[in-house]
Length: 391
Image: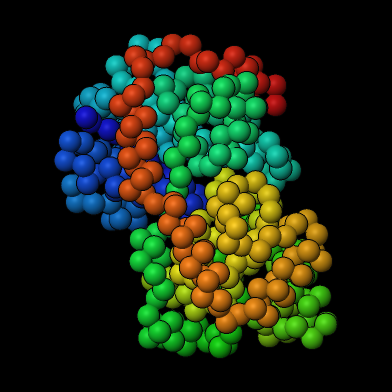
């Protein structure tokens, strides 16, 4: 079977965890000798994403300077490759859903955050998502998503049966699933970034839904009560709004915050492994990879009780209400004071995280591709296109 993965709109630092999801699924499928995997890349992501792909995957560079040109060149590439399936890791308005297409289309819709928190998005981006998501739901031969939470949200929103949308879980990276970083790697990485002996960590981009500002408020409240928790943030703080940037600057001046920007994968593995706890106050997640990765290396986690996060953390996590600063503070204090790690709790967390792995997820996706009926012409989701225009 020939499968073409479109990476046309993916950018390593701006697309969040969906890039790792694409790499994990495509890379695992490439292990199957019965499959021929092709990937469409652009001049903007060919080096960074392409370098992470296995050697036996065929890379196609889509020339041009913008998405409309890339899409036109991708159409020609697909005609030449002649795949049985195109897999889109994220919907785009220029994806191919021609009525007379000779291939089937599988599209991942990770979540519906733009409907839950529309004020986090510019109107043009909301409209783009509405159109692209509605078209995918109405026209794809297979729709899949990251969690049972997202599956239910998509089915409810678009008027589908839940069985119409498949769940294909993301996975912690192989480094995390292999266990904690070595003591030497942890010590070396802490020294490189000048970190204290004990710290909490929150690896996340500085998008509004990640809720950094309430986390900082919660830790400041604890400091007033004599509980000082040094915090390490991973991500590009240039994405933060003005109010958050002021809070970040204040915490840095007070000496309890480290903002490290983007770091290498092995450094992230070492810093999470060496943390006393992971704090994850996100208001919205389609999955929640950092939670699963911390659990994989035995690090205690306090995280939001919303969306997919209870599905990811199971009974191995201390939950809080991310909209209530006092709730965040109580949970953070609890996991901080209960470190060092409880061996039983760490073992429970590792077992929970290993439920999510790309070997099983790729097998699930491949089964769905093989089982898909003859190419669909009716959506099975009667509300999809009309709903996308209404929002």
